[in-house]
Image 1: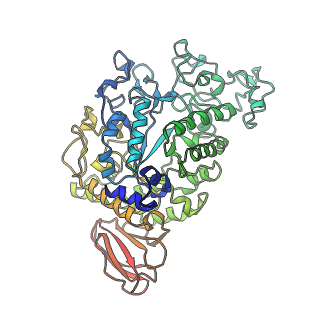
Image 2: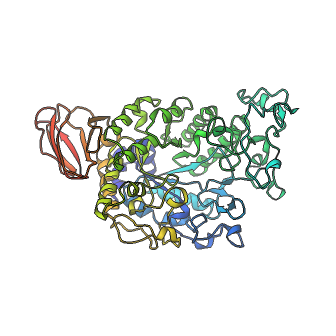
Image 3: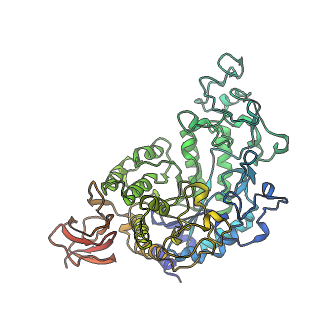
Length: 599
């Protein structure tokens, strides 16, 4: 039995099966591994083209291009479960696996749906990734190891299928509700239509039955060749979309506009709500998945989530999944807990991805801010619905497939850093991630020192041997290898650091559930110290030196903490005085110290 499996059984008793054990764990007990299946491992080359014939503009397959399918699939993921579990992660979050439009984009600007966010059929697995049976086998195999599976879902939009008569071959600027109301076609002076429709704020079936003409802003149509491409069939009807043109990602358009041309669903309509409850509830029923990450959650009206979330929780409970984790993507690049917290209060999302943590970590580690930026982050925890306890359930991360990797961000901040210094800085980032409150989330490849060249396609490298030139010229961290070779080994020091820290986190409940008290912070790079747990003599102290010079300082601790055991780094053996500990850290050093009271 692996160390991780033994830990899981210990949480709920020796008689528990692996599935019973994982179902008993609350979300904050997890360490998440996020993966794009297409970029992980190719377990079945027969599905590389998704059952389609032709060139890359038909099949979407071109392993030499960063914007097309590379061949990774569910069988590849399943055969690498040993690797994923050896890192110490306990839950796997997969980018969407639903059937996608293989290729879309204007002539000369085409790319493929390898990432999973251009869905046409919400009811089945994309053939590029395998079959529904492959997904069932993957979930069962993960569960047998005591690992959870989180699906990435989308309710904001579908693939780009609906076209507008007024915009064929050219951009479609957003047309707002005031200038193009639902009740008139072509503007405020246009022909009356939908005269009895009371507006999208009246979200009843009776009211939306009166919205019979969807041509209030533009004239939407579905090309005949794609008339029935979306599944379920109701998704092919333009009545269920906003049809207002491209979002500017500001103001009203952020909710009602097409996300880079993707068909934006009218999630105010009760028919759309019930449709998605049925769609995603079915994935819980059929496969017993353990949670949903919700893409583009901030672009959907609050009433949708207020109805959808309880429906999914009830569906999961009926399946015996008591700790179903739902967390929304609320994209932000600022340390602004108030912005992200509003989605837990108004929209009633149980959790959101902690973009504020990412922004704080980036500012802290890049030298752009003092260590007090972390204190401001923690001060904001009270803003989430449920306060500090809710913040424990926020998935935290250093980088992702949209904004890019922390390794690249640190390289931009410290362009003259040596290889040894690059490793130290990225190590420090992972110490913060795995010791702070929240649910640590590792983006696949970070553990192998991947850096990328930026965000989006530039941060979506292959874990198996890559054929993409712009990936293979990356300067990785902690290794002299390149992405031209497969990276499933355990010798990179970042991998080993994550695995070590993951075990420390599993072994100490304070790091998963303990309150956070910032003990030392300043308005410049240098010392950050905080404790996890109560003042009962068993708190855990985490200290980081974000500067390139050694430091010594007295740090406040709990009055009952007398002696200290080193968990990582180097810790003093005992308190200097009641409530005080003298710390010394090398440049870019850290220490994780477990307290014990006087005997």
